[in-house]
Amino acid sequence: MALLFETLVQGLLIGSGYALIAIGMAVVYNVSGILNFAHGDFITLGMYACLALLLGFGVGPYIGLFLVTPAFAILGILFYLGLIRPLQDTNMLMVVQITLGLTFIIQNLILYAFGSIEQVVQTPISAVLLHLTDRFALRLTGVIAGGVSLGLILGLYVLIQRSDFGRAIRAIHQNPRGAAVCGIDVARVRAATFALAFAVMGVASCILAPTQPFVPGGGLMISVTAILVLILGGLGSFHGTLLGGLVVGLSQTVGTVYLGGTLGLALPYIIFVLVLLFRPGGLVGGRSLA
Amino acid sequence: MLEVEGVVAGYGSLVALDGVSLSVARGEFVGLLGANNAGKSTLANVVCGLVPLRAGSVRLDGAEISGLSAHQRVERGLVQVPEGRSLFPQMTVHENLWLGGYCRRARARRAAFLERVHRLFPVLRERAAQPVGQLSGGQQQMVAVGRALMADPRVLVLDEPSLGLAPLICRQVFDVLAGLGREGMTILLVEQNMNLSLAYTNRAYVLERGRIVHHGASAELRKSEEARRAYFGLGEAGPGANGGGGGDARRTRQTEGGAHGVAV
Image 1 (tube, chains in turn yellow, red):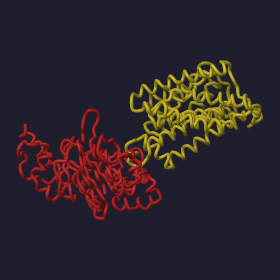
Image 2 (image 1 turned 90 degrees about the vertical axis):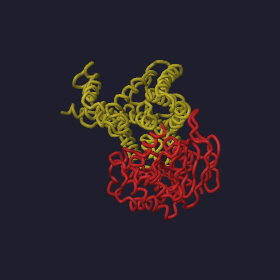
Image 3 (image 1 turned 120 degrees about the vertical axis):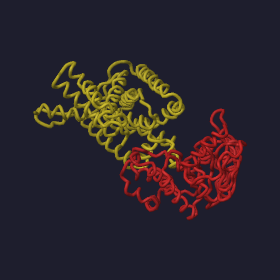
Image 4 (image 1 turned 30 degrees about the vertical axis):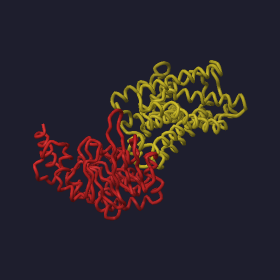
C-alpha cells in the first residue's frame, strides 16, 4: 500500500512536468496549426542556458528563471516572425521541415558549446529530501518542479478561458477571419501567443534542469513525450493535455515499479495505443483549448 | 460617410472589381446587389480591409482608410458581418458576442451593448451558454449580426446575410436591420436577394462583372426592368425575365433558371 502511494505521488509530480511541457506545444499548435518538432530542443536549450548561468555567473536555476523566461519570450516572437509567419500561408509541410531542421541546428550548437557529456545543474537544495513517511522521501527539486508546473497550468487555464487575450487566442484558432472582423489584431495576438508559449517553455526548462541530467540530443525525447501527451489527451485540448501528462507520468512510474525492465518502460506507449484504438480523438477528443 | 472611389481589386490575374465607386451617407441604408461572382463580396472585403485594393480609395468621414488593416477599421467603427458568418463554433453564444466587443472603442461599454443585442434577438439570451456550432442557421446569423453590433458600429457592412436562411427568419433579421437604420445607423447591405433588399433599403447599386451598372432609389429600381436583367446577368440578351418578379427568394431563383434557358 505504501509503495503504491509512493509510486502515485512520484507519477503525479513527473506527469505534471510532462503536462507543462506539452501545454507549451499545445498553445503553439492551437494558434498556428503547427506541431513544433524543435519544441524539446528549445527546452534543452533552456536547460543549457541555466547551466551557463550557473557556471559563468554563479546564478542558480531558480533565479536564472527570471532571466531565461523573458529571453525565451523574445525568442518565441523571433521564431514566429522569422520562421513561422512568412511560411504560414504556404505549405504546412514546409513549416514542419523548418522545425525539424531547427532541431539539428540547436542540438549541434549545444554540442559545439558544451560537448556531449551529460550535465547536471546543481543547486543548494539538490540534496534536500522531504520525508513524507519514515521510509518515503521526495527530492525538494522534484516537488518544486511538480508544484510550479501544476500552478502554471492552472494559471494558463484561467488566462485562456477567462481573459480577453485567451478568448482572442481561441477565436483565431477557430476562425482567423472572424477574429479580424472582431477587431482582433491577429498577427499581434499570434506573436504574443508564441511569446507566452516560449515563456512557459523557459520556466519548464529552469525548473526541470535541476531534477535530471541532460545531454545535447535530449530534446528529441522531450518532443516525443510532448507529442505523446498531446495526442493522448486529444490534440490541442487543454484538459486533455493535463490529463495526458498525468497518465503518461503515472504509467511510467507504475510501469517501472510494478512491471520493471523493458515492459515497464513501454507501459506509457501501450496505454497510448490502447486509448487511440478505442478513442481515436484522444481522451478529451475533438475539442481544442476549450 | 463611407466613400468608395475607383476601386480596382482582384485575386491573381482575375479582376473582381474594375473601377467601382459608391457612397453611403450618414444614416443611410444602401444595398449593393448583383448575381454570384459580380464582385459584391470583394467590395465588402475591400471596404473592411480583408482584401487589398490595387487602385482607388476608400474613405470614412473623408479620411482615407485603405491603408488601415481590418482591426484598425473596426476601431474606427467600420464593422462587417462576413459572408458565411465566420463565427467561433466551439465557443458559446455569450463568448462570441463578448468577443464582438473586443475592440477598444467598445470594451468599456460591453455590458450595455450585450443588453441591446439581447433586446433585439431575445433568443440569444436563452441560448447564451450553448456552443454556437449547435445553433440553427438563422440563430447563427443573429449571433453574427449581434457580434458586429457589440463593436458599436457607425457603419455596418453585411455580406449576404440572407444566405441559406428560410424566408421567415430572413425577414426577421432584415426587420432588425431596418430598425437599426431608423435609429440612425449607416448600413451597407451586400445581397443577392434583390427583391428582399430593395424592399428594405433606401438606395441601391447593382454590380455586374466588377462594375456598377445601375444605381438609384430602391423604389425606382424595383420597377426597373433593366436592373432586373443586369441582376440576372443577361446583359444585352433581350427581355428574358417574364415580367412579374415574384416575392420570395425561391421563386426568384426559378425565374433566374428559366431566364438562362432563354438566353442560351
